[in-house]
Length: 330
Picture 1 (tube, rainbow, N blue to C red):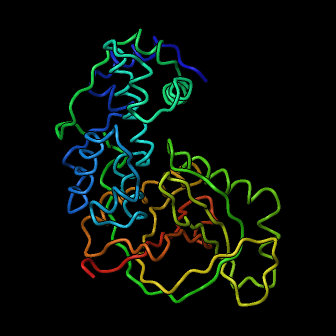
Picture 2: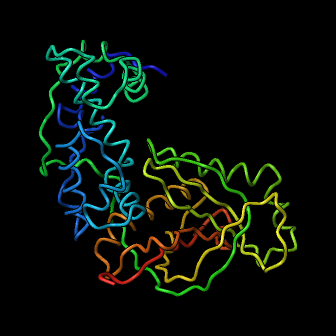
Picture 3: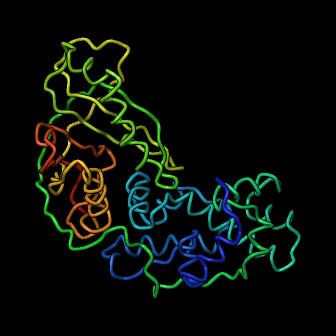
C-alpha cells in the first residue's frame, strides 16, 4: 500500500528530523542497551557501513572484521538495530542516494555509485521501502543526513525491567521431524510469519497427523530457527523429537548435534500476549544477556523453542528457549 508524501512530512514534524531519519533507516545507537564487546562490534560495523556504502558489503565480510560468526553477528545485529544487516545497508544507500540527487547530481550516476544497476530498479526498491516514489519523496521533504552519533537512542524494543537467568545444560544429539518453511528477517517479517505458521500448523490437520506417527518420541514440539544466510533468510522448523523409527519422506527432518545450551523460560503469559512475551525474551537474550555473559553463541549449533504441556492452558503459559553456547575465548 502506497503512502502519499504528505505522510512523511507529518512524521518529520511529529518526530523531528533526527527521529524521523532514524525511523526510516538511519540508525543511531545509544549507550544504555549496548554493552560489552558486542557494543564495539556493532558501532564499528555501523561506522564501516557508513563509510563504505559505495563499495561491496557482505555479511561474511562484516562478521569477519569483528571476529564473530556470521550467524551470531546477524542475529545480534537484528536484535540491536531492529533489521537485518543487508536491509540496513540497502536502506542507508537509498537515503544517501536520494539526498545526493536532491542536491542536483545526475540520478543515473548517483544510483550507479550506490550499487543500483538501473533507475527503474532504484525506484522500485525505494517505493518498497518508503511507500512512495523518489521524486515524490524528495519534493516533499527538506532532506539532510545527520551524522551518526551515540547521543541518540532509537533501539527501544526491550521495555521495562526484563531480567532472567538461564539454566546451563548439556543435551545429547537428537533428531526432529516435522515441517519447515522459509522466512526472512527483513522488516521483521519473521515475527509475522512464524506465528502464522504455527496457527496454520495447528488448524490444517498437520499437528494431529504428526503426533499420530509411530516415530514420535514425545509430544513436546520444537520451533527451531535453522542457519541464516547473509540476507537474513532462514528456515523455521516445527517438529517433534523422534525415537529412531523410519520417517516418511513427506516430513522435513533435521539432526541436532550434542550441545551446551543456555535455557530461558519465558515470563508467564495468556493467549493475548504469549507471542509478545516470546519475542521480548529473544530480544533480551541477544541484546542484554549474551553480550554480558561469560558465553558466546556457538554457531555450530542452532537455537530453538520447546513447547510442552506448560503452554497448553489459556493462562500462565511458558516455553523454553535454548541458545547454543560455548565459553568466551574458547
